[in-house]
Amino acid sequence: MEQLPPTYSLIGCCVTRDAADLGRDPLPRPVHFVSRTRIQSLVSTPSPIEAEDIKLDSAFQRRTIVEDHHKTALDPLAGIDHPIVIDLIDERWPLVDTGSGLVTSTIYFRNAGLDKQPGVRPAINDVELAADGPFALATKEFAARLPKVPVLIHRAFWASHDIAGEPVSDLRVTRRNNNWLEHAYALLEAALGDRALPPVEVDASARIADPGHRWGPGPYHYIDEYYTELSDQVRKALANAG
Image (tube, rainbow, N blue to C red):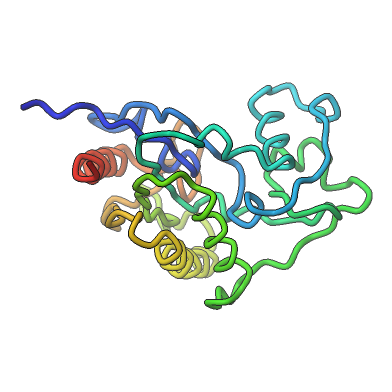
């Protein structure tokens, strides 16, 4: 019997979302796509902001900033009856404290000048990832807020080199970020408990940055072979989730 296309929602970034457009056999697009936010921000207290105060042309960029402030990004997931796919590449963004709570200092946030607002100050990043630290505690609250559906973690990491074999960025930074992600994925999986499906991870041999990627060069903009393999793994994982 022919396998039906998977239905899923996504909490993550382009590293997973691009599998719906790129590669040999792309996935369907996610039903809901929560992006440009961090776990600690998602579970923080709301911060006031009005969309008309955000000086950006893009409605998508304004919406993500508002949702990250108001803590409404997860609202569309309430009551869904399909799995959720999660990656943690957006954890690369700094956190800031608005005085009301934590928000994610994305490029959109900074382009709008919101990092210069009175009272906004950098938040301390949880580099230790202790079992009782800020990130670990946030993953537990985050898991509690998700609907009771299976969750598939896409263990995405930074690419160290591009197709020419050249380093994409400082290799020390890449190693440090990937080491952090390794531990962060483990904490997230533990927090999800028995809702966590066996995670998917594309082999490092395909984790190669594509300088010609549609979003431009970057350590999480991969060659098409990455998305082909990711799509195949996600299909198999979600087919077994039912």
